[in-house]
Length: 254
Image (cartoon, rainbow, N blue to C red):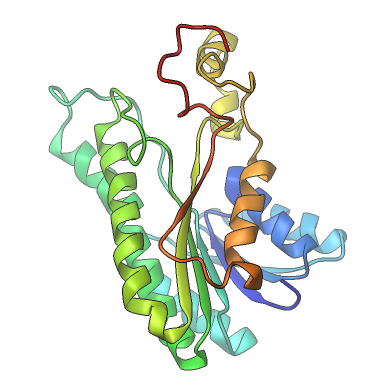
C-alpha cells in the first residue's frame, strides 16, 4: 500500500473508519469520504497523529456530481487514483414487503446501488488512463448469500452490487483494473452496539466462532483485495462472517 492513493467512502465510522486506519497504517495515502465533516475530521486526526497520511472530502454518494467532485479533488491533490473502496451504505428500519412503501424501496436502492454506480463511474477515467486500479465494494452476506426478513430492499441492493461487480470486472480487466467485494456478516459496529444485549446474543447464536466480527477484521479483507498481491483476482468476493453461512442448520451443536 506504500504511497497508494486510496479513496474510501463511508469512512467516518464503522467498517469504513477501520478500513481507513488499516490502509493508512500500511502506508496508503487515504482520502476519506462521507457526508459528516465532524466525524471525518476526527478520523483524519486519529490517522495523522499515528503517523499516517489522510485527508477528507465531504460528499454524498447518492449525488453523481458529488462523486465527480470527489474524483476531481483527489486528482488535483495527488494526480492519480489507485484504489476505490466503496463502503458507504444506508441502514434502514425493518419493513416487510407487504407494508414496505415505494419510498422506502427507492431510498435504499438509491443509496446502496446507485451510489456504487456513481462512485465507480467517477474514478474509471483516471484508472483507465493510468492502466491501474483496484475497486473493492463492501457488500454483505445478506442478499448474495442469505435472505434477511424485513430487509428485502437492502438484500436486493447488495445482491445487485455483486452482479454489478462481476460484470464490470470483465469490462475493466483489459485496463488492469480489478473489481472485487467483501461480504461481512454480523460486525460489531456503532450501529450494532445500539441494539440490546438480547438482540446481540441472537445475532451471535448462528456464528460457529461464537462472537461478532470486528470492523478491523473486515478491513484486512479489503486490504488484501486492494493490494498488488491480489492482482490476478477479479470479480470475486471474500466472506467475513465467522462461519455464519456455513452450517446446514443452526439448531445443532458445533
